Amino acid sequence: MSKTEKIVAVKGMNDILPTDSHLWQLFENTAQSVVQSYGFQQIRTPIVEDTALFKRAIGAVTDIVEKEMYSFEDSMNGDQLTLRPEGTAGAVRSVIEHNLVYEGPKRLWYTGPMFRHEKPQRGRYRQFYQFGCEAVGFTGPDVDAELIIMCRRLWDDLGLPEIRLEINSIGDAEERARHRVDLIAYLEKHEDLLDAEAKRRLHSNPLRILDTKNPALQDVVNAAPKLMDYLGEESLAHFNGVRKILDHNNIQYVINTRLVRGLDYYNRTVFEWVTDSLGSQGTVCAGGRYDPLIASFGGKPTPAVGFAMGIERLLELMKEAGEPEAPNQCDVYLVHQGEAAQLQAFVLGERLRDAGLDVIMHGATLAGAGSFKSQMKKADGAGAAYAIIIGEDEVANNTAAVKSMRAAEGEQQQTTVPFDQVVDFVVDQITDSGDHHHHVHDEHCNH
Ligand code: ATP
Ligand code: MG
Image (cartoon, rainbow, N blue to C red; front, side, top):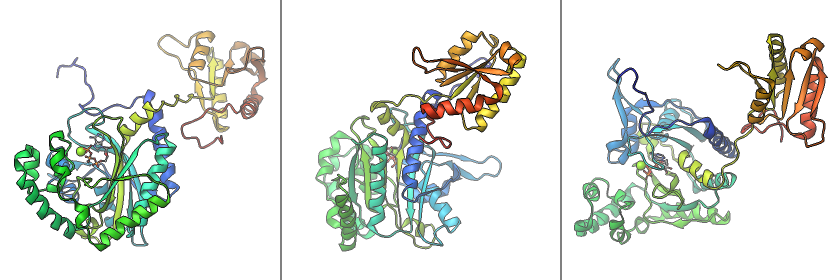
């Protein structure tokens, strides 16, 4: 690369710019507050883990492990490492390592970047973000249903009521083994109709053939033996237990008997939340039980159920539904001219922030500090409710001019206030008018 060649972001990995970040914050804050209202606690695990963790947790014959992982050798010590492609493996590793369920079951949530080497396209990136939950140590169908109900609440809070739910049960290993024999026999009978990928998976992971997106295969997989017909009493009871709670809570769903999970360790309940408005990348959230996983890692046998949602896809839906306006950047914009005024403005800025207000101090650019007029334009652009102006006169008189940016025509717009009373004056005005600007997440103001 020559010295003047532009360095750009890695393909499939995107910047999130200030024009979008408020939407990300809205999603993250909403999701966090929804899951916290069900008692979920955050877990933060490293982005890099031993490659072996993902190979064992996700399974060798999966898209992720076969072709999507960013794996590398640590050049310092030769360790085989991988950028996490999903969040469950790390969460489970951490639960076992720290014996987190020692005191009883835990409800956990996480969020952050995941990495998969896929072909970048709409709704499919190489660095993408997930928000997920794992309920660890709970056996019954109640927690499966709770996770689903919790998602429904999140969609409602985000203004996305049209997201649809599909559920299925994939039973336990024994039930899948019996189904597998019949499924392979059936697929072998129709091998001439299969595509190359399906043929390759015929004996390694035939279940995955059922959720093929190839239109040419739809008829043959639709007529394939259904796992649902192989479920034993306990698996059926669990599935019906989930359905009973969903029905009782008016959660609509369809049973999709072809719904499976790409990850090997799932059992019983699987579910997906889907939308028609994102083209072929229509799954916004996928989840299910993975009771056998923790024991398979050498942990004490511990049932678990979870889900992960793709944040980019949800943000696209939020934008379609009518993007919320970007919030104002501040309550007060500080306009000043001259060195003495700037010093006063710094003092005032700190006092206003002490009082809980958000303040932008006008800063000089290459073009200088700018005229009062150009500074007022910036105040307007930042959406400030008030501009506070300090010039030579104000410094001399120990005052500041407080200008309401939202006063109606005819109302008094600008008031000269003694310097020591400015904070009280502005706080009173803002409290009276309810003008305090809305943060996406606001700790110090009550709306
Ligand atoms: P797909 O069938 O779309 O490849 P998947 O089965 O690989 O999905 P999961 O591993 O279940 O997906 O991940 C859960 C969710 O994360 C998906 O439903 C999707 O919303 C999101 N997701 C998965 N991969 C990507 C990606 N490369 N870019 C953006 N979002 C993704
Ligand atoms: Mg995938």
